[in-house]
Length: 203
Image 1: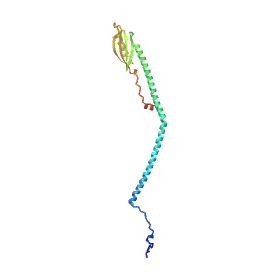
Image 2: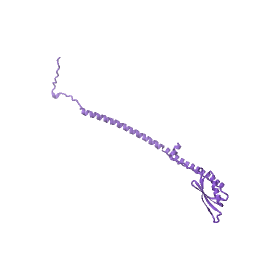
Image 3: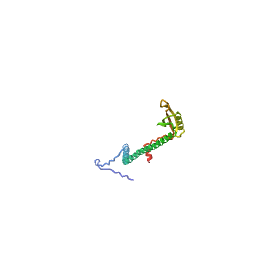
Image 4: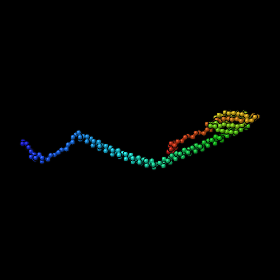
């Protein structure tokens, strides 16, 4: 087989040379990696910007709802204050009723149990007891009065404070007796109402 031999007879200065563009691997790899990282950062930044805008939009909506419901919150707080005031008034009315009933029963008791020759000059409530001051013409009637008081279910205890003569003749005596009230005669402490309880009750 005869081989074909080609010979370029064009002068060297007239020859057209084809130049090839080549990039070395040690340059190409960093460029590719950098391009990928830059593209990823751009995409991540775009996602973050979108998330921030969405969060800002939701925040704006929530703030608008809060502003719109501000009047409702104020009305609820006002209702809570009014409810507390009403409960205090109701408690006060109940206490007035209890106090009135207590004194009616005590005065009826004193009128019934006080001996004929004795009378009461002053009655003062001191916490859970009542201080009774009176006058009598017989010392024994003071003891009788105390025994009769002690036998009544409205009374928890009776103690003699003093008995002394009112005048020089000794025919008239003054006495002071402390009478403890039964638990049923004592006012019940009203429960403390907080704004939170009021709001829960209103629900």
